Image (cartoon, rainbow, N blue to C red):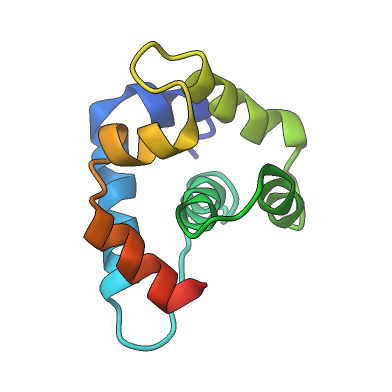
Length: 115
């Protein structure tokens, strides 16, 4: 288990893994299954970032995140706070673009598949 959401923001290896997952989801033919050991932390962050990348609101992301057993709003919020207080990011869009390295083409592909 890797429920250290601020590390999802600050650790370059974790950011690279999330970027790879989002790009793979965008490129997949057909349905996409996102999972991890417990199905809530890495999966929850990945789905939250996917939702943000297609234009979901904070309330939509949080509502979806809280549908998973064993999650709390404070857990996701801890990661989101790490983004907004970061001098490198300040908001989720910049985290997705600068932190994960997503390009306009990635956002277009994710919206085409999931929006």
